[in-house]
Length: 262
Image (cartoon, rainbow, N blue to C red; front, side, top):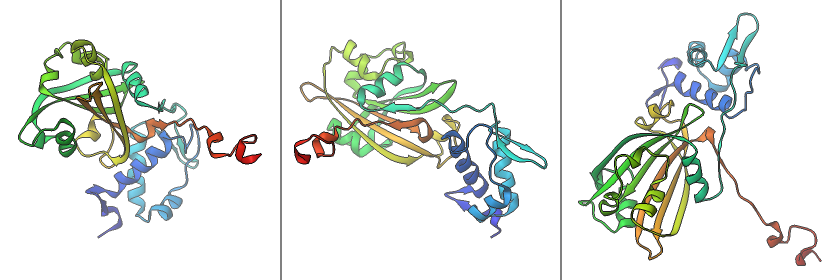
């Protein structure tokens, strides 16, 4: 098989390479106005044919991310600016980000649990069987006029009755709406992070390619009486995400003046 016909996960090699270079630009590894490596350097790095490299660079040129000049080389566009990243330290940060963003609702529908992306976790959390139904809300979060995240919210049918069609077009989080409408008090939330790849259904919604990196954030909300309320399943483009942890190093005896260092 010719080098320019190599596939990775069902994608042409040039598309994988353009995705890698796009992420380098959007993450700041290649800055605005910076000269990129030469085609020969990319050939050595990716071990592909020259036509594959040129095809990948053409995609980025069409997107306005890079500019190519005969005799000078290839440069990151000076008009390109780094996107603001989600800075997340806890569950409240996730909710605040949503309220400060533009929300585009795709669908709200009742589906069989076996039809949802995280069926086992939905069944376990809501204590339901695969034959039961759940309400699923799909939305895309936009920031700086660009799609940044894809949200799936899973709510029991009983709680979903409190949410109107008008509500789902508001910027409020689902857990915030349910707290108001159903008079619920949220008692606990568990948040999990996982590095994933965008699938062929999500990628177009985020102006991305299939297999591009993303951060999957799952949040499980329960009431103060430990009643399951909602699962929020977020997919955030990796180049738009940053996780922040404040550390108290004195607890580990790593700061002068602590008991362990006396």
